[in-house]
Length: 142
Ligand code: HEC
Image (cartoon, rainbow, N blue to C red; front, side, top):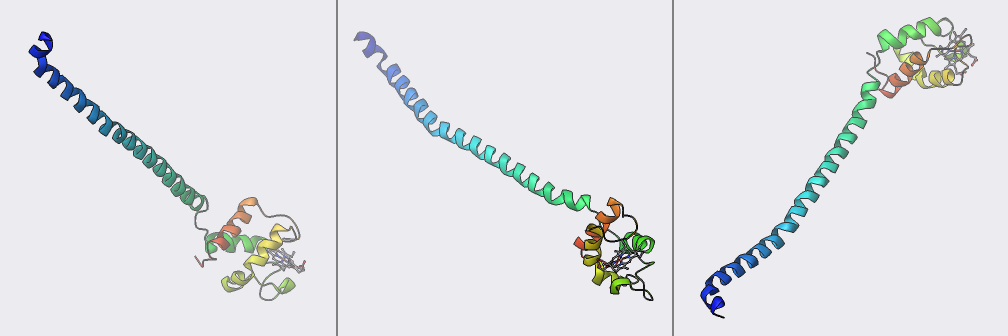
């Protein structure tokens, strides 16, 4: 008892410190968890955003804008225009001008894809992809 009496102020101080530590622990521990969760969520969100961003960016990078003048028109001249021009429009299809190609683009791609055009031979995969991408990009007169 003497010891307690003598050291009562110390005991009180220690008790206060213990209570204080206990309180701060209780207050701060969930806070830490929250921060962790928030950081984790942010990381996940950022990763998601980056993934979404790259998945939108990558395909457009993969199919860079196809030029009608330097890619589509020369390909049609080499493979199609001998039978599809203004004086001989086989099957009613004229591919001699941009406007003609514009209106016959989808049917041309289908004919190429189903193997009926050109009748003799086959286009390269690169040419077919170019035509497909040019159509997807809005059939630009570029
Ligand atoms: C050797 C001549 C010849 C060449 C080369 C040729 N075509 Fe044709 N094409 C024809 C004839 C003939 C028809 C009509 C009869 C038919 O459909 O087979 C035709 C029809 C078409 C049609 C009408 C739809 C269809 O399938 O019947 C399209 C579109 C077409 N050609 C696109 C093309 C494209 C694009 C090319 C080049 C990649 C091409 N053709 C090359 C002769 C040709």
